[in-house]
Image (tube, rainbow, N blue to C red; front, side, top):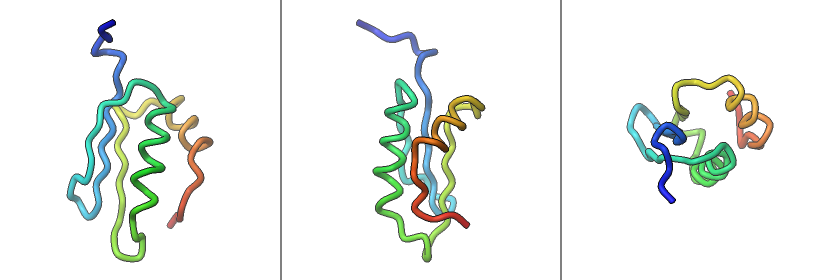
Length: 74
């Protein structure tokens, strides 16, 4: 079964303005798992992190905030 390209969500994570990962995800659960996996390997005392998800879907942002336990905030 082929997916409609419109059903995908792009995920890009950067540290210190360098892309460390860019993925195509098919649902919000996969995005949450991907972010958790990436963030557990980052030393926040040495680097800043930016996460860009699709084009900024508010409902998805709320889901992810509730699904991911922040390692650190600041």
